[in-house]
Length: 313
Image (cartoon, rainbow, N blue to C red):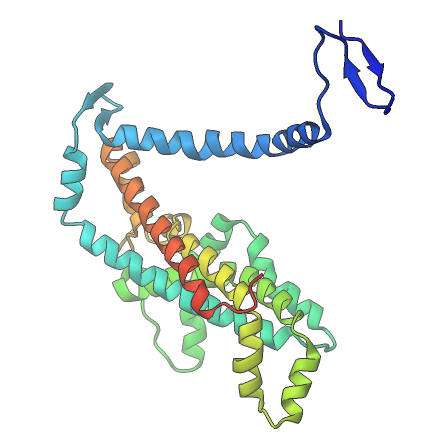
């Protein structure tokens, strides 16, 4: 048993042969490690280990039904390079991501500017536009699926203004437009709240000073407001692009990748190969490709921030 004695200076010390007590720095370091331990364990269990398993499975052919697990080397990677479906799937993924990012961020910024005012009932409209974020994704998509039917609510509204609407979910371009619309309206409230918080942090005295110097609303917005909220714009770009590459439920519920493969994005193609066709090895290769795309896009955006993000701490 360790017995501590007090030194003349009042500091504790161990008897010869006993355990030395921790210093203040060591206790602070131990507390820090204990605080970050859950996060480190979570990343190891839910990110690093699954990533290592996906890499391992990509070099094997795993047939669940036949209960076979065979090492095939780089055959799955060669199959990816020669797969004729990859090019249209990548093109569809790119179209979907670009359209989603453009309309989501543009609409979110517009709504935030409109709602950044002290007007009667403004809280109601802020709540109204944010409410789709907390609605169940599947329930939201099913409702929009009914609205986009040939005799649904969207075409009914178009008929009121004399427009004969298309069969949205049965034609390639309109099916893609329908999926983008559903996803934009589902998450635009989240980006709107982020922009609204950033706009309320813009000092009013800067805008007043610019106005007294003769600057118009457009100049104030582009030369003062946009630079001041550019860190928030960067954040919304990153989370929206990453989210656009992970969209699955909307496509599974609305179109199942069709008509043809017009709405088959990379995540849904991965799902088809791994869980519908039982090609887990090839599905693992597609997972790695998706991971690399997300990683590269995030790194590129992070590096480009130095050129257009201002007032970054």
